[in-house]
Length: 252
Image (cartoon, rainbow, N blue to C red; front, side, top):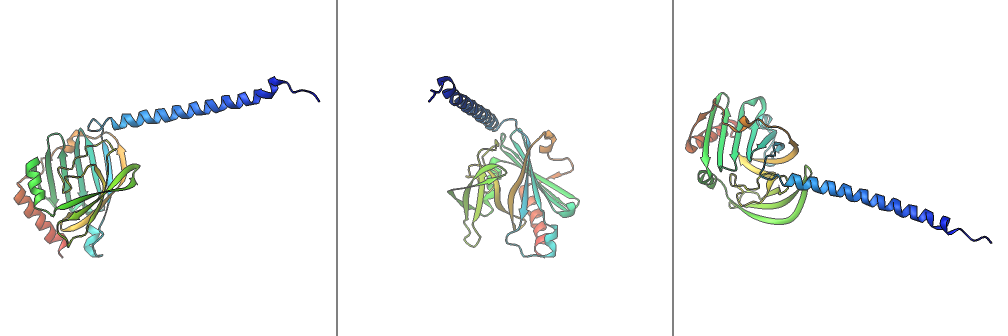
């Protein structure tokens, strides 16, 4: 019986080993590139990232009515230079409300357009806290539950209202989108993370927000200025205007 040539006995095995090593090296390179790209993205937190987040709005506790056809269906949040601008518009652009937040200077502005009447107010951090202190408060309970929203891992926090007659709220916030994670300008001030899904009461109704699209794109710096067509007012006057909105559009 002929003896096999060792050269041909081991050559296929060596070829298999070489191919395996090449595949492993390629996979490691792909993982390395992905890791560097991820670190680069996260290193921009609080930096010069800019873009837009679109949220879907629903009304979990509202009964169907004719007026609901006018309710906003989306909220758009633009971001640049550590600033945020959120905008909510009703159908036919009859009513719009905007928040402009400067996370560096700790300034908060609210804009309200009701038909042709345009009003705006600006507040510093202390004034903003007092503004939200007049609204229902919450006790935040952290959990280990997570959900993937727009590709971002979000941690669930349960907000328990101090008013026991109101329902608890599930908040999903992420720490990896690269934006300022502080919530000094909203009712959930002790929350750690940028909110991707949450409930908020506005105009006397509960609005449920859930991010459905995140895009990184160039944003005009003028997006974060209060337009000259708006008349500046104080917090008391703005509260009266918001009450007028509730009387007109909600309590009918």
